[in-house]
Image 1 (cartoon, rainbow, N blue to C red):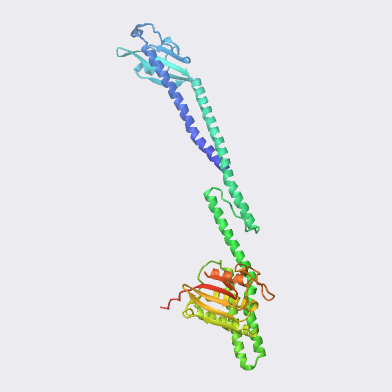
Image 2: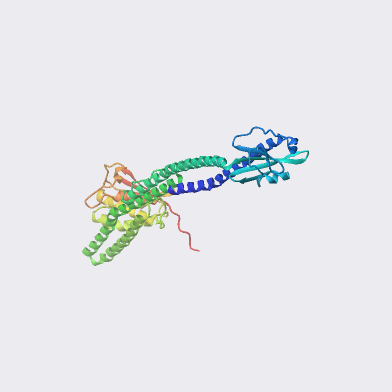
Length: 430
């Protein structure tokens, strides 16, 4: 605001200074023109007999103006003025209009002609103090106008400053609230385009930050559940190797190594999901659907066999050769199979079907659910002593992040359907 007021003050000074000088020059010029008019009017009333001593009757004129008629010798013959012609009046005897200032007076002298010869001079004068009074009065009016303009500018600047600072202070307050941990704080609009753009950018940053922090919280709470399943399989495999005969040791160790490799992929995938902002898209890696379900069969066959339950896999014609996001499919299948093992009953069937541009994977068992299709995916809906109750929630989020969908197709028998987009095979090397 101080800067705006100073700028207005400088502008007023730069404008008023030449304007004041112009007023002074104009007032003196107007006064000289008025004196010349009075002198010319008086010259008209000077008769030709003035050259031989005739009398002159001067016309009336405005008060404050002295008018005198001088002969060629420079002697005042009629009117008022110096007794003898001064230095400004004398040049008029040569037939020219003379103007000048002297002794606090403005003087104009015009020649008087008769029969094409100069017979005298009319001198008109007025005091400069009178002109200066009018000039000072005009300057006072100018100064008052400038003062009013300055006050108006200050008032407008103060209002404009409040208009600008209020939304900036509100924006700063919201930023401070975000810095204090309130990620629900959002900047509001102010009807000022530039500030609104900053507010929208800040809100977008806060939204992104809140999304990332929420995603990190998901990672923290879901990591143990997601890593527990391959660790349990690894434990079962190693226990079987320790209890079985030597002939079965190699097979048990092979299965355990497969579990270790799957655990490594699980860790990589969970970390990738934790670091990336979830949005629909196709993951970088993909494999044949048949290979994905075969890997799930190898990982889970031992766990279901230990519980005395069957695990059947089926791939419909034409669907096994389609490529799907492998890491996402593996993680979701593990969650669904773990859920079927812990909460389902009887035989578990995994079926791969083609659905146009997508692949459907059905996981069903012989049990039934009392939960509806929406609440089954809520956190804690399937909590058990061995699980955290967040597997299905995470599985659905992973499916949506890959551009797919996970739904509860039927409640009796319990059937979950995973839809994943078909990915194009990588181009052959050139």
